Length: 376
Image (cartoon, rainbow, N blue to C red; front, side):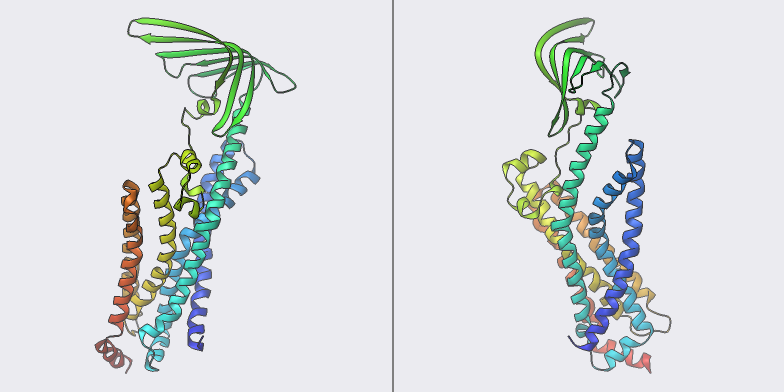
């Protein structure tokens, strides 16, 4: 690599490291504060809070890196313009297309980092985070299984356990489910067991009875059912009845491109939804070189000025916002209709065309004359 390319690339990487550290720290601390409040309010320790915030870090980094790449190229180009380095390089015969080569290499490098994150580290971290949340939900459930006192784990729910045997069996269990005043149920059983299921803890009631009081206008009907074994979803009871499957973002990209029945059953999604998620991941790293090139190419069209190129900085930020808006719009559109997944590649294509147009404009002969007159 020529020395001038190494110099520009070194400048961009140094600034990129600084901006990435600052932006990741701000974003991560903001995320950690919300997690800190939620977890400590549930009685979790500081180590659990630290683990959860660490598992959110790969996602934070993948979101922040393209912005850090844009900030590094915009600030670095502005500094080189202010110190007349760009003018000297162009006077030596380097065209805007030639100057953009190390910036493109820098953008591709950032894109590769984002690709490693979104295809590898982020799904692994999200899957681990989902498992830990399920474990914590089990721990929170067990906090309500205390003998000798009435517990109210949710609105309309009353729970009483006479005693807990040494082997973990719950003795003489009483549950009143009055969340729906028109449909109230009382469960009693001689024994019960807590079993971990895929969607949370489940109570297995043994040798008991359920009494269901149903209101139908002015009439009431009482139904009594005796059972030897009955399963009660205590996890759904504590979360208000909502059962949440796994998220598509917890799985690897290759598996999403060819989803199997187990994945679709666990997530409740369709095959087109899984493929759309995979294509969104593939398209996400493409925005990194686009962001870097927008920050560089927009500042080239300003030429040299003793007052700097802040007007071009404004247009560069506007260009990045337009590309990000197109990316969000494409994601929303494909979310409504997964068959339109090719749209997720459109923002990167439009951004690349914008960068090429800016470099062509910066290299026009009339602009070179203007720069020569300004430098003189």
